[in-house]
Figure 1 (cartoon, helix red, strand yellow):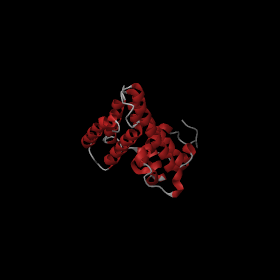
Figure 2 (figure 1 turned 180 degrees about the vertical axis):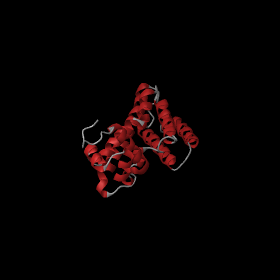
Figure 3 (figure 1 turned 45 degrees about the horizontal axis):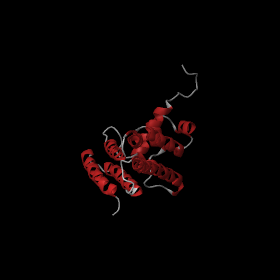
Figure 4 (figure 1 turned 120 degrees about the vertical axis):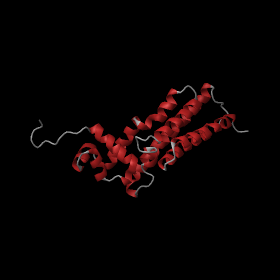
Length: 203
């Protein structure tokens, strides 16, 4: 039994996971301290003692998201043998993830700070850097495909990376708006038809 007066211990990782879901559903601005502490099962002083402040908690939640539900892009880019297969798996896996009935819809990094107060510019900048990191990973995979010979060197790697990143984030927005997984699958089908056009390069 805990000594009298000692606060009851809580599972920090489980609390962080619940905070991630709140931020994912409501965004940074929309998630109040009351929303967060209610979901995490702790009081405000415990939140500040364990995580420092709301922004610090949010940054940890984004990092957790990247290690779990948000890790589909990195796995697809790393595990498939060709650039085309990597990009297609990235889109299909995320389309399924964005519409999973057991999770908030869409991508946390896309939606968490669509609108933000001036005082929270740091949160906005943090998420921009997260998205830039995704862009860099997509571009690196396409360039690797060129160096390995499964994509012509004439292909515009920068344009391809921007296009498929835009499709990826568009899938997230559509999922948040209630578009079904089957409909998103058809979007991916169409996006992959553009691969050969890119691969032919500029004429």
